[in-house]
Image (cartoon, rainbow, N blue to C red):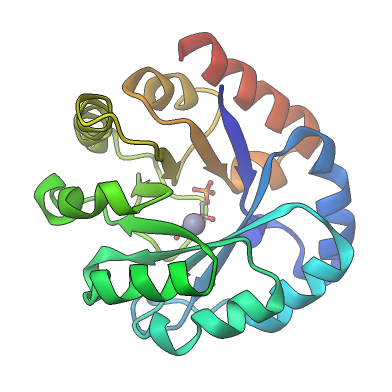
Length: 218
Ligand code: DX5
Ligand code: ZN
């Protein structure tokens, strides 16, 4: 079954509570995009916003850390109420970061840029709750889905099945009604969508359509 994780990056930050309420019935997780202006050329939000969201909702808060020094902030995300964090494999120190997230009792995600090869993250699969395969270069919402990532999704799904592992494949970037079936067919099960949901006239209807399109192809 497909899980839908709307990215609040495309919501109105001045009306976040209403945005969350509007999709709560049709979403499984909330995806929180954290950018530091260093790992990616954009700045967004951090633990204070997670803390405010946590006061407002019991939803699973899935924090995607596009930051160079995640080890300095994991504890603050946990304290703010994050459910899980994903750190990027490209920042390095992956083993230590996984251990730190486990020790903090955060669900453990590892995010992977579109041009980072399978071999770079394969050794960690057994230690993860999710692997986040980016289908755009991180930094901005509203970019075009990169179909060239699909073989990597399929290869990851095959490796998970072959090794009998228990982790989810999450995809992020350009996911909408048209691309959801492509990634579902390849083996992804958690779909992040920002502009396709919060840019729609009815975000909840858009989330339902993405879920249905994914489930039909899964
Ligand atoms: C991109 C972020 C994404 C982004 C997705 O750097 O990690 O989560 O919000 O936005 P869309 O769905 O518009 O591509
Ligand atoms: Zn993201």
